[in-house]
Image (cartoon, rainbow, N blue to C red; front, side, top):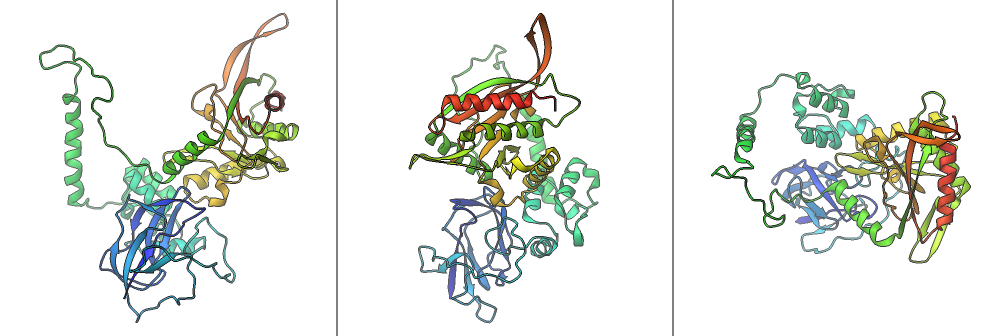
Length: 445
């Protein structure tokens, strides 16, 4: 008896997911609830367990392939001598027999006793801590590491088998991988596989030959004529996956639904006393402005032309990563002091970098902040993502010559850009919001 397993919704209605790593091959025998595959969504890397016990007949794709939610993921030959899940027992997965063309609907999962906290995964084990780390690691070659760590190791070209593990029970941590990538001398001595050398050699040879094959001169020694772009495309198209794929969808949706308008001005920081946490001051100023003009701390429903004003201030903080843009929410920012704000930001950044942040922390914010000035740029038109109605952009700090009574002075200033959805609030409300923000940033401390 064969049975097909369809890719379940791995969180919040996401339309697809990318295969990170199969934990089985065709022909292998897998037991119920053993790790089948690691899938990357826009939110996290999720381990998907096997819904049955039996022999693997087919796998839907290879690492890097994008699988649409509801599409078949694997096919099994059931082994009734091994543990099987009762038909009435729900797994949260959509799966059915080989004859099924569509996934079966899932019923609500029964409440479990003494469940640990959710780490952001939607299917499979919901535990956090060392137990899950060890369980996931044992299924892959004896090297103990969670899927996010494995994905990072592949990206950085680090051989996990040679990394010195410092985690509990010999688990390779994210920090272990990053340190090994930064300092290869930390890798344990091991003979590199012959295939590795065979693969690297042509790449190195091609890289060394590349500069010689490119020249601004023709073979006759005359300057080459250029051709208009688009006549011939160079490079290889790359399909967007995971976080970047979701980012593209979100930005396109925002562009279609929002009527954006941007106001810009400069916050004068000349009165600041001593060294201060710039991001904490920005967040405090946003909170003050939200209390002064609640219209921008709101959600707007364009279909029903209704808005929701929020009593709390949950600030979405844009975090740039190699994988794409994350916007975790700093909850109840209006109740935090400077220390609480800094600790909250550090926690969110650490979770984003390790790809362990719960999906619930990546939505539901009431206003957002983009501190792009950490890199470059003075002013911008940041994208407002519905249902929010406003985003504050902070540009690069600069020293400007300003006119004062009787002369001129050099003041340190911070460029501020405020983009808002003009359907939800007026230009006057936005200007008053911006003024309240600038006034708070101008205070000595």
